[in-house]
Image 1 (cartoon, helix red, strand yellow):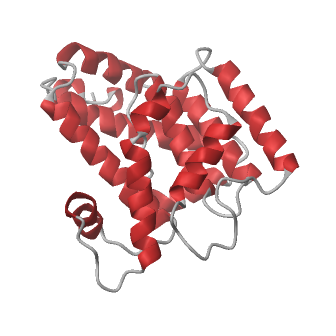
Image 2: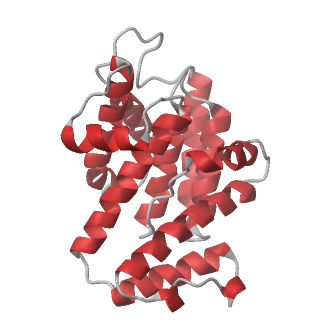
Length: 239
């Protein structure tokens, strides 16, 4: 079964077996958010372990030997995630919303060699607007996994910011997915090699496959804990 068909099937099954706003769903969403914050931190060169990240997020426990900037970057990503529901209320992503996300990711960090929330050039700014428009037109006409991959890959190629393009691209990717009712895709450090290879491909379908696998994993876990049973999370290929 194609990964797009499978994640769609799992999404429908989740809606059937899960009570909206259940404690299980909220707990799983928090886990997914913590995973995203940690793996994004490590993908960008951070040194926190998963346990250290969770301890800092939940208890405010600072970590000896880690820089102030690392702590601030994690805190900023957590702040963005806490306000994520407001971001999802937007009808569409705009250049201004991307600039705002970038500014919030670097808020309060001193000594940066660039200005947070600003594109590198007018040309990059125009290219970002064109990319967002293409992805906006594609919504509803193709699977959101494909649109998310095109947007993510496009932003990484345009490189509109001196630093922080990866986190912004992954946030935008997840906006596309969550806007359509799918869970976030967490690009994990264990899959860094495949992720980097996918970013180096001209065809966004390689990245779409990776994103689809992560969405499938999140959905399968939610279906299982919502009471759907193992038969609902078994892939077509393994039957």
